[in-house]
Length: 259
Picture 1 (tube, rainbow, N blue to C red):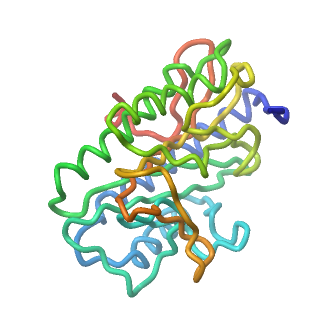
Picture 2: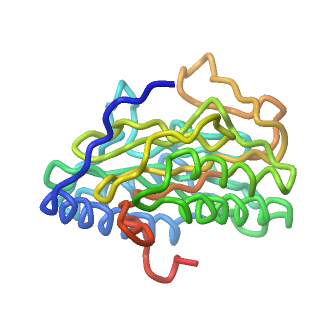
């Protein structure tokens, strides 16, 4: 497997990405407060758009490759890329994934969270918690001198240890001046070591974990929404991180969220 060159950001770019990440974390905090039974995914999308613009930033998902919304909002068996709709209301017991990003002064950030809507089952709560924890298991290896596939393998080892299906048709990515830059960051087991990580690289690491099998399909009607093949629920957790010589710096997280 060959890899395109992974960009190493200069100090001024890193500072811009820190600010882009900080502002995106604030957007996610507002969305977390808004998730409740009875709210529509369309309303959640408008909240995201308003907060991003109030922070003097630009939503980077809107019109990206034709995507029609500011946020990807995916419910239950929708894995990613769900299109918000004013007629799609959240119900008690749903789980909802909110994936979005913004541009601050030319630099991108990207992050996703999955939340329970009202009271959810213990199984769904564990799926959300363990998907989040798989991210942190992966980024233990995200430091200068380590290799990219160590992140992938650690995520897979952790999630599969609970019998979950790790989505292999979708992946994380590099990020910076563009929303998607090299490399692709898979969450499943990978052969070989992958490229060596260097301080100054910025990555969007995003486990997508299914309660059942890993297989997914694309909705033929809208062309965007990815769903689990077996109808099981799916959770998503993502942050933009900075590779350093020590522990990675998580750019899109509030301090109280860290493990």
